[in-house]
Image (cartoon, rainbow, N blue to C red; front, top):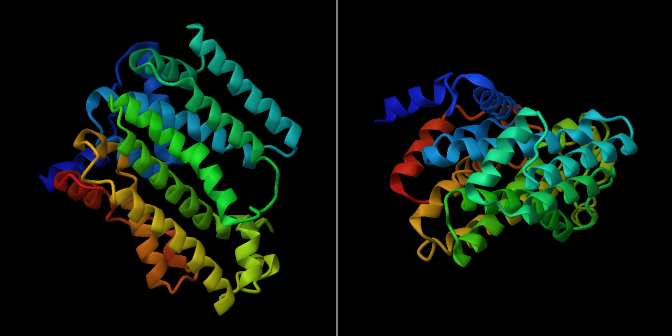
Length: 301
């Protein structure tokens, strides 16, 4: 069984890859997610078949928005791009999507699962607010951004699974916050190379770590202490999410597959003694596909 699961992950044939424009749009979304959100792509492959294409469309939409900040040279251009997606969303809910592959697939997902527009709008709104190149003032501000983006994506994933459960929503909220925190940590080397630091200012001040410390890739104890505090908060959110596990319907568990790569990164970070710049942390964990399969088989998150 494990061998077959590994082969499935490596298959170049994406779900819903049929002929015609619809098939091309589905393949475009799958390929975009595979290239830009590989762990999300793997997690999606373990969803029920009727949800896979819809979640790939949601993740492709999220990728498109997440790339705006790093792909524009001026904030005004970013604002225009966000408005472009806001207009697309409006057209989708008026059943008149433009001929854009992500828009076409997202429209199908909205129609098929009656997706809540508010969650999609919230992702755009907070991605837009994040166009400003400034650090989070505190961990609460970081969590709010994660809730409005990553948690919203999980709420939509639950809707594709036809899960309407307050406990599942609570779990999704905490997992999304953990994912947002981990995503920020993983991006530190990239942002530092561009002389940018977005980590919470209050935690940096607490440990006497300056932005310059991160920009030059310092491995001093105070820098590691900043990383430790932030990573610990992600771990706390994962534990909170798991405290609801007995109350959450198993039908919702596939939406929370993302906890596997989150656990993997936090464990590797701990082994690296919270040196955020350790080369090992820049490489993919080759065991993620097998770990995902095993977690799915055990029906836990």
